[in-house]
Length: 309
Image (cartoon, rainbow, N blue to C red; front, side, top):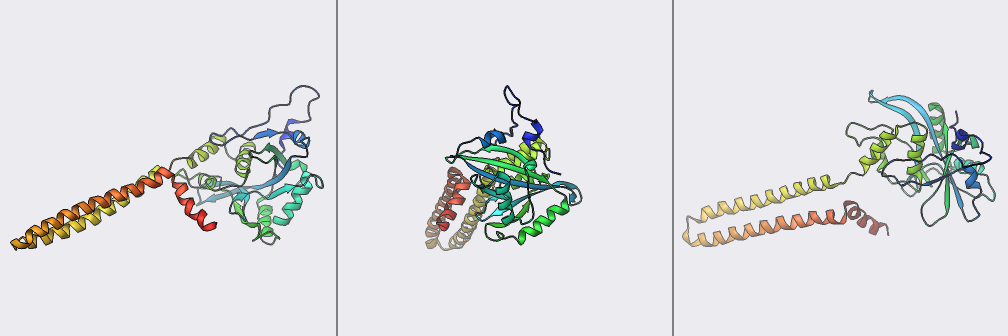
C-alpha cells in the first residue's frame, strides 16, 4: 500500500483563495524547513536543484527481547561519507521527471523497487547557500518485501562504494531514555535526512509526536555529567597515587627518626612530596577543565580532523 502524499490528502488545488496550510514538523530542537507543495516546487526557476529520496517501511509485529514492540521496520543507509541518509539523490529536471530520476538512482543502490507519484509525501526548501528543494517519498511494503530489498541492496552496483549498507531505524525508546531512537538520532545525518525521518514518522503516525520530542530532547542533554564523572575518577587516581607516596615517605621518616642525623633530611623530603602531590592534583584539575571549556565534541573532533587532513 503506497503512502498517501500530502497533496493527495488535500485534494485538487482550489480555484480561488489561499491553499490549506502545509503540515510542519513542530518538534522542539529541530529547525523547521520551509514546506511547499509539489505544484509550487515544479514552478521554481532553473536556478533550483531538485533532490529526491525515499523512505521504505513495513509494519513489524516483532518484539525486542520479547517485550519491546518494534512497530515498524524503516530503511535508511550508511553512505560513503559516514553519514546516514535515505536512498535517492539529485534529479536533473531537464531530462527526467522526479519519479523517473528517483527510480534511476534507486536502481543503482537498491536494484528492485520503483516508486510513483502516488508515493510522494512532501517537499521542503533546504537551508544553506545552495538553492535545493528536497522531495521526499514514502512507500509502505510488507516485511517480506522489505527484507527482499535489503538482500537485493547487497548485490546492487553501489554497494560497498557509495552505499556502505542498509540499516533499520529503531522506533522505540528503552528504559534508560537513550537506547533505541534517541541514540539513533544522535548519529550524523546528511542534508535534510534527519528532518525528513522525523517528519515522516509524525505525518504517517508511526511514532507519537510527544515521543519524537522526547527522543530529540534526550540527544540534546549536556554531557557535563560524563565529564564530571571522568574528573572525579582522575582526581581519585591522583589522590591515591599521592597517598601512596606520602605513606612511603612517612615510613622512611619513622625509620630515620632512630638516627638523629637523618631525621631532618627525612622531614624535608616529606614536605617536598606533599608539595609535589598538591601540584599534581592541581595540574589534573586544570587538564579536566580544559575539555569542558572547549566542548567535549570539539576536543574529540579536532585530533580526528587533523588525521583525516
